[in-house]
Each structure stands twice: as C-alpha cells, then as structure tokens.
Amino acid sequence: MDIFEKCTNLTPLNPLYEAKIAIEKGVYPFFIPLENNEGTEAIINGKRVLMFGSNNYLGLTTDKRVREAAIEAIKKYGTSVTGSRFMNGTLKLHLELEEKLAEFLGKEKALVFSTGYQTNVGTISAIVGKDDIAIVDKEDHASIIDGCKMSFGKMERFKHNDLEDLEKILKKLPEDKGKIVIVDGVYSMTGEIAPLPEIIEICKKYKARLMVDDAHSIGVLGKNGRGTANYFGCEKDVDLIMGTFSKSFASLGGFIAGDKDVLFYIQHTARSFIFSAAIPPANLASALKALEIMQKEPERIENLKRISEKWRNGLKSIGFDIGKSETPIVPVYIRDKWKTVYMWKELLEEGIYVNPVVPPGVPPGDSLLRTSCMATHTDEQIERGLEIFEKVGKRLGII
Ligand code: PMP
Image 1 (cartoon, rainbow, N blue to C red):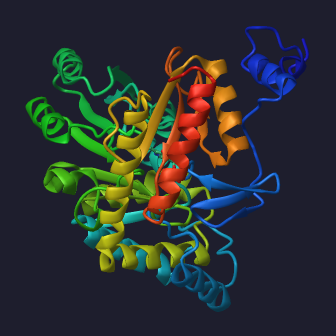
Image 2: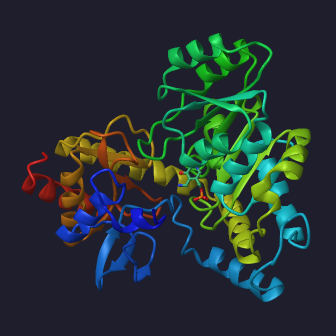
Image 3: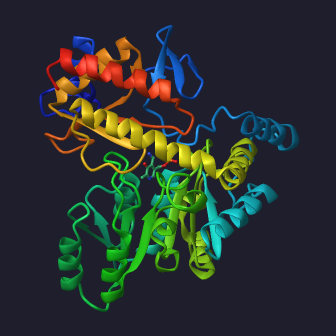
C-alpha cells in the first residue's frame, strides 16, 4: 500500500472528500489570498471588501507606531535571532516583553514562545506528567488538545461550559493525582466567556490547578484588556494565563504567565520552547508597542465593546441566530454546511469577508460564519456590513 494513496483516493470517508467537491462547485473558501490588508478593509480578487474575519481586535496591525517599532527593531537587531531562547536566541527585548506582560497580568513571571500554538503545546505537555490529568472543555482550542495528547498524562473532556459535568468528572478522579483544568477565556468560535468564578470554586474543591487560554480575551476583556481573570476580578485564582500575540497584539508569538517556580520548570522542560527558534525582533517590538498602546488608550477597548454590541444587536434584529456571543467574536449560525459556504461566497461577492466554519471545525449541525469586530471599525462599516448580511441572508432564505 502506498502511503500517499490517501492524497489522491478521495473516498467519502477521506477528510478531503468535501473539500474537493467545494473546489468543483467553485465554493472552496480557504487559503484566499488578500492582496492588501488595511485592517477594516482588504483587497481580495482586485475588489475592496469589508474585513469582518480577522483577529486584529484592536486594529493595531496597521498602526503607525506599531509598524515603526517593528522597523526600528529590524534596523537595530536584524531580521531573526536564528536560534532557541535556550542558546543564542534570547534578546534583552524578550526579557523586557516578559517583564511587562507579567506586570500587566499581575503574575510573577511570563515566558514568551514563538506562537500561541507552541505555548499551549509546550506548557501543557511539560506540566501534565505521567501521573497527572488535564481536564479540558470540549470546545477548547486545538492547541490545548494537542498539548494534552503530547503529554504523558491523561485527558478528560467536560461538556462545553457545563459546570455540573466538570464537577462530575473531577469527583470521580483519584485524589492523589495532579490535576489541571484548562479552559479558553473566550471561546474562539462562539464568542462565549468561560464562567471563571464558578470554575475556580470547583477547582478549589477538588484541588485542581487552573489554566486559562486568553488568546481572544487579552486586549478585549478586563481593565485595559487584561483578560478574563481580570474581567471577573479573580487573577489570583488563575494559576496560568496563556495568551497570543497574533490577535490584539498585532504580531506573532505567544506567552504563558504564572508563578516563577512553575515558569522556571516550563522554561526548562517545554519542548516547543527549547527546540524552536525564538520570536524575531520585529515581532517582539510590535508586541511591546501594542502592549503600551493597550495601557495608554483604553478608549480602543471601549470602542471595540461598543462596535461589537452594535454588530451583535444588528445581526440579531435582522433575524440571524448568533448564539450566546458576548464579545467581538460573533458567530452567525447557518447550521447546514453547504448553505454556510454558499453564503460565505455571496457575502464576499457583495463586499464582506467573514470565515466559514464547518465540520470538523464545529460539530455537525453547528456550521457557522465566524464574524469578528475591530476597535477601528466605523459605524458606517458596521451598517454597510449589516445591509450586506440582510440582503444575502434574505436571498438565500436564511432569514
Ligand atoms: N488558543 C486559541 C484560543 C486560539 O484561538 C489560537 C489561534 N487561533 C491559539 C491558541 C494559537 O495561537 P497562534 O495563532 O498564536 O499560534
């Protein structure tokens, strides 16, 4: 049997079977190149479209100060560190960013990884040893699941945001095992917020540690965008806060923050940290500048909140099902996977980019268009986006 057979023999059981059909039908929605990206608008296929499919929550990727910080860092340090943090890959800029992040999040220490994905994979596989158990929400990000799979410990999954199920699982686990509950602060597809105070109570009762993936919460929730724990006023009770620079920070990279002894352990055992080159100067400098702006310009976060509310209310009043979103991530449930990609295509043709999410990205029957707002979206852009959604939704019989 040729190991490559699966690449060409696309039977209905092959994960690529439907992708092939989508290509044939002209509705394949992935790997679409952006010819220009100015934040709230982009050029796709030579046409200017509204951008409602980005994680650029604070609109800082095109901010003059962030761009200049990146350019200056390249001038000073070059384009790459060409090595692991362990060896030649640590710059003073890495340490500066770690110190400022730790202070921002009220933690003793922070550690910067090359991506958010690597942060979760490295941290979790380092912390969850062979006698330990990670208890994760069923809708946690793939990098959390992969981290658990790469660890030597066990993984248990509880129903999404279901406190009873979490407790039921913790109750039956042996007392002498090390336990860590891992949740997303804000869920990346549904825009829901994890009920941290209640989760903390359960963790304390069963002596489990808590890690929160705040990829979509930093810059979005809490004072100056300090994230979900700050939003609920429970920073002290979240043991590890994870974040990424690829969203509000307008850069690339990730970090984990917590107690210094735990971070020292992770720093010396997380394989994705040790065996991968560190983030380059331009990414460090842009993340540092974004962090500074977040703290100096809270009005951005306020505007993001206001704009997101307007977008959510608008979609709801037109008649779309947006689930339980409370954040700038607003799912528009279409349910049927083919209707979802057809709607995505028509929306793009009418002038708005969003992201279609179909199985296995979501459970069957939950196909959705993932829309997301930026602090820099104008009221006019929101109104234009809503008009397009209404027009296309009516044309396809979805509303
Ligand atoms: N966690 C969550 C919740 C995410 O949504 C993502 C990225 N979409 C990551 C982790 C990984 O982050 P990165 O893109 O920086 O690798």
